[in-house]
Figure 1 (cartoon, rainbow, N blue to C red):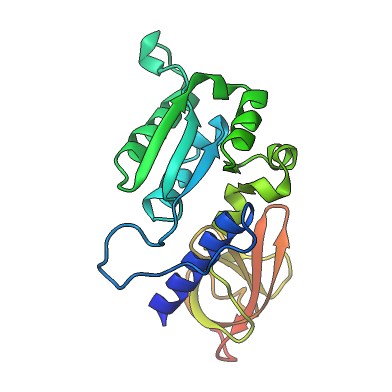
Figure 2: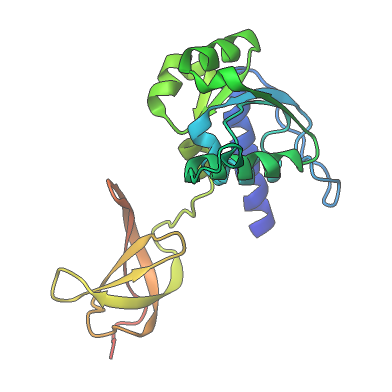
Length: 229
């Protein structure tokens, strides 16, 4: 079941990355297990902006096989060139070095792509998909030519449907008198009704619903068993 969900998410991510420039792209081919690093049978061209290079998630996406083909990326000044202590440049180069080691990926570094206009021109010239963390840059490239890292990442967020049972450790009391607060992997907040007296305990809970807020996902739940000591 877990393997099926992983394959579904990978297919969804692949379709997201390909449909922005090819709405009629063929359904991705998923090879048999153990068939190599490349998860899908299509290679494309992607342009990645500088800010996205500083986000370690982009290397994870590529390593996972979601972006196979040619990656056109900005070439920032190397931190060691001037003995600087620029953390953003260091993270960008760490990402570049990781991308160099991924099979099935060809890198093209271009210093001119540090400029917005040149970056957008490269997307158009190469008929590429822009991968960015900036919604405004996505809008400038055109929704049909770009995808954000958040859109890709959200495909892999766990979905907690009403009725789902799980265990959660109550970390503190909530705002309401009977609420307890816990946290899931990824920092997802869980508000458990009737668990204010269970701080420090791990409870079996049943999901009631969820809500997306400005600070992240909040899940609402109640104890699986009526009595909480």
